[in-house]
Amino acid sequence: MSHKVYFGHELTAQRSTFSSTEKKDYIKAVQCLAKLPPKTSKDVCPGCRNRYDDFVATHIQQSFNIHVTGNFLTWHRYFTWAYEQTLRNECGYKGNQPYYSYSRWYKDPTKSPLLDGSDTSVSGQGAEGCTNQTFTGIPLNTDPRIKIPKGPGGGCVTSGPFKDWQVNVGPLFPGSECAPLNPNQDFTKPGYGLGYNPRCLTRDITSFSGEGWLKDDDIVSLLKSSTYQSFWETLQGGPPATSFANNFMGVHTAGHFIIGGDPGGDFTASPGDPYFFFHHASIDRIYWIWQNLKPSERTKALYGGTTISDLSVPATLQDKLGMGAAFGPQITIEDASSTMGGAPFCYTYI
Ligand code: CU
Ligand code: CU
Image (cartoon, rainbow, N blue to C red; front, side, top):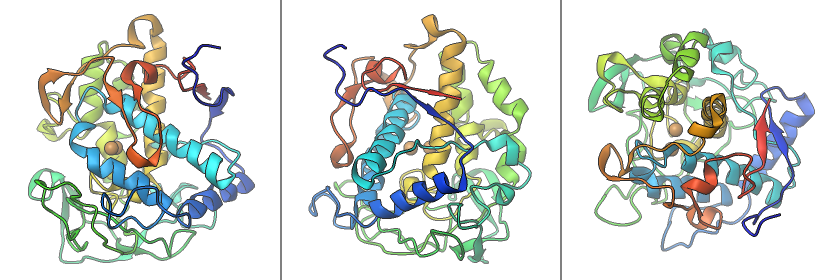
């Protein structure tokens, strides 16, 4: 075992199909996390009320340095893994983070076991809400290059395990125009998006993004990307990256807008909806498949800058990935490039 192994070294396999008992154990662990005290200090995150909020806060804080950047895939791999580890280490969860199979449910995500609103789901559709809004804009409502028509939801989720879920921080760029904005919207000051803003979980689940970008063919054509640059661009809504030109949303953005709403439709606060981790486990799996089609040339492939949509300072394999107060220690992009490298990861997908 090398000195680089700082975490548990058990080989685990991530899956999408869970028994009812496994689903309930997972849900119980997420709810447990929301009852533990936060580790982020009050000065850094005045709105953080629990351990789950630590994860939302670190994502908000780093939003402009982890999206449309070279570390996008490795940072989110580490984030999703750190969340799974925290469910295990602090809430007694024994299983793995499941992923969501987009293409299986693209016609109607509310039919999926994940979003059907049952007591083994992460809750489902929101009540009818925000009826003045006719569309959600991608990338932003104020800059709608793609318009997702309003669906039947938009209000608070009303059934399932997360009907009483309290979202505490964000939003900054909510998909829902009815969401109360965070009291700290000032980007020139640290702590933006981290003021206390308690509210319910809202969703507007529609088939729009699934029909457009999450069918089997869409995933397969993404996986056919021959270079890391084209994979990275196509996944995130390019090329050119994230311009969302030609009405192209890409698998990553489409996966977020299956649910929309608040905080799901905000690229900064989106982890505030527990659906987030099923989506990002799936993104990680797609990255893993793409890497393993040609592991020797693709595992450490890298492209992109260090600030959102800005290629001027290229990312390097030595760049650090940090989880703030949510999880430690910092690792490098290189450490996170392999799920089997043992530093720190040791998992595969089935
Ligand atoms: Cu993110
Ligand atoms: Cu994302």
